[in-house]
Image (tube, rainbow over all chains, first blue to last red; front, side, top):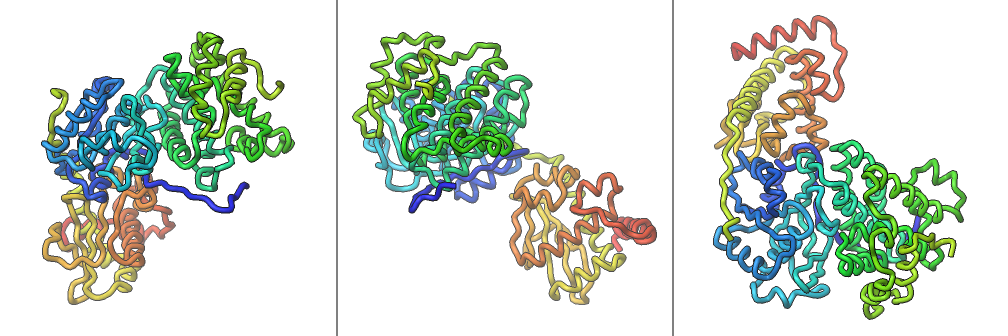
Length: 391
Length: 176
């Protein structure tokens, strides 16, 4: 097992998962010195009755809660200012984000505002510009998410915030919140989590702590994703929500990888969910890194395929085998979803001449450690569906 | 901003009443078991003079207080914790976790392993009380339920189990 000379790992997030986990929230808030939370979510989540389940968990606690269930798909600064006024007027001291994606972005942005001054929000956009811990933030996932919720990142309009203080203090994963969703949305979340786990587990900056989270995340996704789509298995949904939480933590402690950056840029350019983009790119991105110095692709076979296949595969073939296991899993998942999930960029309707622009955006100024050419090779192979390891 | 509102969630009176009843009965059963069962007696003998413990539900109860009086007798001391010096405070984190325990869906050991409880006090005392609670549950419950509630169902003689059960039920009901 890889052991670096030195490393840092930061995770302030407590995970509370399982039966009746929601009812632990009042106790945990008390431990965080919070007495009045603001629950924020979107209309879709509220319509499913999931907010009632959260408020039900506060019965007998003597705690009053504020509720805002109107977070739009793309929250803006005006929404955050309004929310901050509600938060202060109601005397709230903590936030509970229910759902995923935009809701958690809004909750993180709100938390910056209510922990500082509203006019300061733009000043905190960027890398590590939040210097102190924020008010308590609890995240309750539903199957709909982006896989970034437990991470150190938040986006609002054109602003990107990155700070370990944006990671939630508590993630509460309860089977009652794991309602059935459309397969494409579930797959998108799972693929982001898998891409983050895979990049955290194989990158040169990995460490034993990120390995632990990424290993468990990959195992949960490999074992459960296809079953959940086929049979709506609640325990499997719980495992996937755990995997997404773990992926966010691993991702927050390793540099952003090429699959993440290209997938994100591709999602922005094409309008496809970033998770679907990262899922398509995953085998190609990993294949591209197979012979790169410092990458640990062969280690990935153990969590993905189990001990029997791992020991039965020669060491020099394990990386290739790991990629083929991911491909098999993706085909299995696509079949389970009724064949509706694209596995190449061509199938996804991406024009080939758009790839160069995406590669340019993803590579940025090169600070991330990969070039436009690196991104373009991956994109072109993913467009054609041509295995990158054979090129 | 009309999507904003404030809610004060209500209580769970029926669940609280059920747990309060169970705690009341278990408290009296522990008092009875300390007179009837040798193992329970020995566990309490090892505890310090005047030892008092509380088992209850956060944040507002119900509670059960059991302790040793001046004559070293084990007594159920009611449900009011105000003004009492508690040596061992075992609190179940919420009423739903208490329901899981007192409907025997989760045993004491499993509930502890799942972080359903907070214990304030010495760990050896807590272990002794968990053993006492386990013995109490074996007396009070039929085997099919008790084996869900205790860590390991014991093998006891007919006399200890059934005659002891009758004596403990009788003493619990009359409060003797």
